[in-house]
Amino acid sequence: MSELLHRLGLRADRALIVTAADAGLSVAVNEGIRRARSANLISDASLCVVAPFAREAVRRLGPDLGVQLTLSAEHELLELRPVTYAPSLLGGRGGFPLDASDAAEHADPDEVHREFRAQIERAITLGVTPTFLASHDDVVARHLALFDVFLDVAEEYRLPIRHGYTIAGGALHAGRLAEQRGHFVTAATVNWRSTQSLEAVLAELPQGVSEMIVHVAVPSDELRAVVPDASEREATLRVLEAGHLTSTAHELGIELLSWSKIAQFTTNS
Image (cartoon, rainbow, N blue to C red; front, top):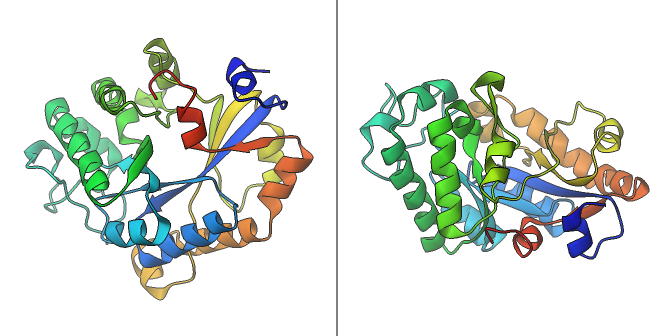
């Protein structure tokens, strides 16, 4: 059993945080997350404060949310823009670059630091009590200098981070860098899709605390028009609502945790 699980008072040797990403992206995403969380099918959600329905997400989901720090738009038909004046963070369309690698290549670390702080402060202004930090589209994993900024901001706000990233296509493992600076490091981070076998994914989780990231939404023609994987998000919600994740985790002796619980027992909380 890991030291953290022992400190948490858990008897299991494996635990799992289930986090829904992209709150604020659309009303359909917000409602999908609300349904999953109200039924205790997920433990956490992360808010993209520069997304068009961020304020609606906070009203619908409440204050306890992670902050999904954003530097790329990801979806071609969805415009996401910086909070601050940051020329190096702008793409050819006038907002964040569409591609994560493009965003990382041109981003000035000082401007990223100001932008990340501004996004966290905007979340707080909207009524959020941040529970952890995440990187939208994994942009901070594309450049060591950006990952350093990510860690700096997490330390400044005393928040745990989602990581599990491998920097520069495998050259540097971000988890080890974060651990060296005293951050809690998950044993594994899984971006789960409904086409994957839950049983296989959960059975292969290592000892310690892991995180599973899910993307959910209720059916919406508007979301399907702008987000290519809208149908997959709907399918993921259906699988969760069928109870397969929680029942399989229980059968395998995997405890479910939340980021707020983790934060109470980690160095940077």
